[in-house]
Length: 315
Image (cartoon, rainbow, N blue to C red; front, side, top):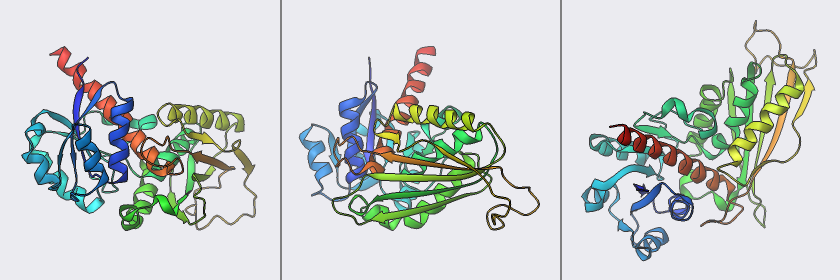
């Protein structure tokens, strides 16, 4: 089977982990180029040792590589600011772009929820690590009953938050909150990120708190469990930390700051506790926040490549 050639822009932790996943796991994707801006980065050195074309001249270097002509999909693992410039330079070349930054130039994609809706988009956005972990849970609740409010707290090891993550903290909260609404289906979303300095580093933990309309609690639990299983198919370390908690919303519980006035009160308060352990392909197992991004990007790239192969066969 002919594999689809891809390039990765960003030779840091996320780009390097994605490269190793493509090499070790993918039956449909093949590394065509690794792109960075630091000639001494481990990612570029590792790619070169593996016989992959490399450049330390960023997007301009990629465009100049002979291998670029064969690349069909470009993964951008840089930063929100850099992606805006990279996307503009890639656009005339007709490449499909999978954006792992919070730039959100294209539609949000969470593979277990809405990839089919955006298979023909030229630029898809992988939201954030917190979004990939929690939006599926909100979507699982939304398919049972309206979700009035959904709040997520992503707690990650401080050690797993590199310069790019720290520089994009504001974009993280804004992008994740928007995805909770746009993809998850909540009327209102809120996102919080915690960089936990504990030593030894803790693995990623995510909490979803949702206020929902009346529904069978067993149906809500079953929907969440099914969705967790769907995500775990491409993120093996993704799991429920404990059973889904559902409690009635007290009549005197103040919700004015969460629910718009005049909209009626939700019935249930749903709490979902998640844990994400990394596969340690390149990064340590505690870096589940990075692993879920690269795993989701890999799954997205593979499905987009299958679309292109199917279209080619049809022609």
